[in-house]
Amino acid sequence: MPAARHTAKRGPLHGRDILRGVPLAARLSALASSSALAACVVASPELSDPQPPASSQGASVELEPTPPPPPSPVYDAAELAEHISDVYLYPPTACRLEQLLGEDGFAALEQKGGLYPNDLDEGSEGLSYVGRACPQPYCESALTWVHPEGGLLVVFVDAASSITIITNDPSLRRDPPLSVQRFLEASIEERGFEHVDAPLFSSPEHARVDPSSCRGPEIEARRQRYLATRAMRACDPEFSSFWQPAAVSPGGGAALHFYAEAELDTPRDETLSPGALVVTGWPHADDPSFVCAEYVDLAGARVVGWLRAADLVELPHVGGAPQRAQLDAFVTGSTPAWLQPGAPAIDLGPLSVVRRGGDRVDVGLEREIAGHTCSMSGGLELVGPRVLAELDTGCGAAGVVFDNAIYLWEDGSCSGARATCTGAYRPTPQ
Image (cartoon, rainbow, N blue to C red; front, side, top):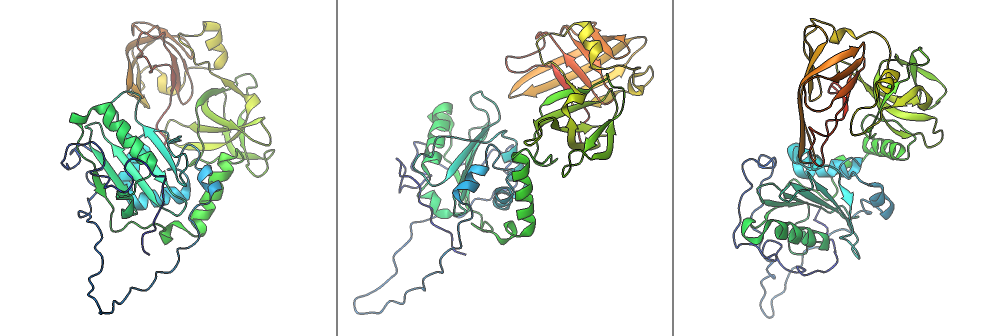
């Protein structure tokens, strides 16, 4: 179908070629070879201004038939609002973005972190979402603009100050949304005029404003599942978010059941024993006594579902370790087999752990958070069956050993301004 025309709020670049309408050096450059998009973005041929049909006085001009009206809008206002903070998770948009960008380009978009609605679109029909890999200048960033009629425009700014603009509507090159103009201007100002090449514009031939593959029962079912999860009535491994580590309470001593989604009082077959660590998200909207939780075992097998909040003990995320009495209260029982003398080294995400002779446990950790790094290496001492204390890491560290994880605290000596080694370390989900 013909590309739809999307009307955005007029701005300083309105009606001007987006590649020549910003104060950039008068040249085009390919993406840096290290860019994640280099393998998946192919620039379209140079777009020229449309030419009027040739005619002469007295000669009849055969007009092209009027194209059929476009279908109903891809999104309505409510749907645009439903994107919330993760436009790349909302199934209809995720499908269209992947169709536009390709698998690698879509993955590069996800790596920019949260995509939050911003205030750049006042007076415009569309909404834009900005993501950034870290808060420092020169970090990779991206803007995604979504129009109700299906128009998409994605801007990538990489660490080498190369700018790529990809859209499913070539008309947006000459008539860019105001939010795109502002984002480009801010990115250029941040990096400095002399350090930024002119944007590389791409409108891939395969891109469609409303691809049929992004409609239909399967997409609609996933959309409904997404909405139920965002309404905190579904606990879904694809759409749920988890952030608060918690221990299965050792007080009861009995196995803890996950519960069925349709009937929260009905236990599922999956159980957790005291000594397990989970990460929790939102409580259930209709019954806050249940919380959405994720468990990952040592083999990386993942279970997601509802747990009773009263059966869990939250782990304090503080600078410096809690007192020994607090650590003992989080978990009981003997040291798990994976940390017995002679057991092989194990990786718990970025944390490597191995038991040496006696009670020495060597750890190695390097963790990046928003462009900042924390690192820890050296020894901890097993001062109880499941409690670790500082030995020679130099981080003032302490920890609790779970059946499937270690939770570490440190005093800030090994952290950056925005990064900390304090946190839960679990196997990577498979």
